[in-house]
Amino acid sequence: MRNKVVLIVDDEPTNINIVANILTEYYEIRVATSGKIALNILKNEKVDLILLDVVMPEMSGYEVALELLSNEKTKSIPFIFLTGLKDPKNVKDGFAHGAVDYISKPFSKEELLARVLTHLRLNDLQQSLSQTIGNLNHQMMEVQNSKKEFESIFNYSKDGIAILDTNLVFLSFNKAYLEMTRYSKDELLTKSCLDIIDPKDKIRSQEIFDLVLQNEYIENVEKTCIVKNGQRINVNTSISLLPDKKRFLLVVKDVTSLKSLEEHARLASMGELIGNIAHQWRQPLSIISTAASGTKMAKQYNMLDDDTFIKNMDLIVTQSNYLSHTIDDFRSFLLADKEFKNVNIDTVINESISIIESSLKNNFIELVTTFRKNVPIYCCKGEVIQALINIVNNAKDSLVSNVHEESSRYLFISTTQIQEDKILLEILDSGGGIDEKVKSRIFEPYFTTKHQSVGTGIGLTMTYKILHENHNFSVKVYNKEFTFENKQLKGACFHIEIPVA
Image 1 (cartoon, rainbow, N blue to C red):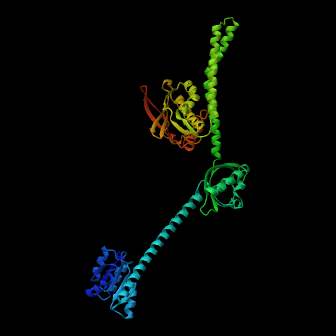
Image 2 (tube, rainbow, N blue to C red; image 1 turned 45 degrees about the horizontal axis):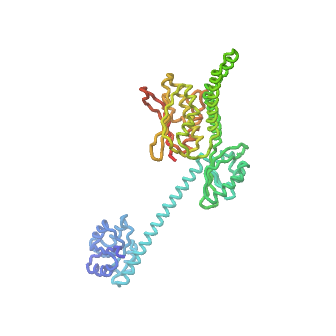
Image 3 (cartoon, rainbow, N blue to C red; image 1 turned 180 degrees about the horizontal axis):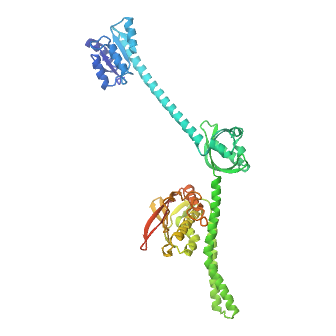
């Protein structure tokens, strides 16, 4: 125990030598021949135990004791009065002044060593206990803070939160869950979670809870619930098994409005698609009609020679093949596989362009493309094509509305490798840009700067959901000024960062 330091305070050198000779084999010794010297030593050194004489000139041991106890730095250091005073009153006074022990002179070596060792060990235990209590208090405070934080989240979360037992009976729930289900607290406490689930989802729901018992957590479970008024709502649920293994925690989002938004988006997308089909087919149908009527007229007036007939029939066949090709493109888009898989980004962009290219040409919009080929990305191709069509249609409407000089209508689509594992897709138009006041709102549902006859504001909302939420692509929009063919232009730039597969 050499690391323990004992301070001997006595005005008699002989006494100091006797005590030091006994203890020096076991402890590090510090010596003070007066109370003031002892207090100065304690300012600079760490001491584990003090052996203190009572009768000393200038400053008695009792006075030193009072100084020790009044100082924050020294009040926890144990001290033993080591003195020739043997009167019981002196012993009583010694303990009254805060001593942990009182040893009268003369004393034996064994007694001194035993008393010193005992109080050093007791002090170590007391310090360890104090530290343990401090740690427990800190942990209790953390538990209390966590409890308050959980209660705050539980009570004020906009998501519905419920706690069930393993029989799926409700134990507790927050205000948002009650509002979502339309039931009162007393009504819901009498029900099982399965009681408010659409019958067609009950078996699957029970299987999901069984799975949570094994894996402790599952997220993004979509199902239909029947609330108090009989209305059906679509919910997205995450389920956790609580640490006691006897309760489930449910976090529930009402996604009914999102489902409605997706349906509106699908219908709006179909409307855009039909419009693009009309643009795509108008010219070839006109050519077929002209060739057929011209052939008929030539036949009626006996002016149809073989060369004219073959030329017109070849023209009809060529345009029919073109129409067939466009039908295949639209069918590919409509029936696109919804599974995620690796596909080259240039393939995705080219298929998007094939659907909208005629619409751009009919509105005198020049398309400028720069692609990196054969760069694979992991995505749901049909969804990404839909998102890109939404962005391009938005750019087209902006160009037609804002750029009256048709020769200045440009749309740029490019891909750039910005990191080894990331590619940047940019879609830039020359339509003048987005008003800075509303730029931050363009992805909000139903927000649009267009007239109602032009757009619903759903397209860009679904674009953001598809690219960012479904695919975890980074999506930013900003206005950009640039020069092209010696023209100073400005437009909206969609900046999409995509991980490389």
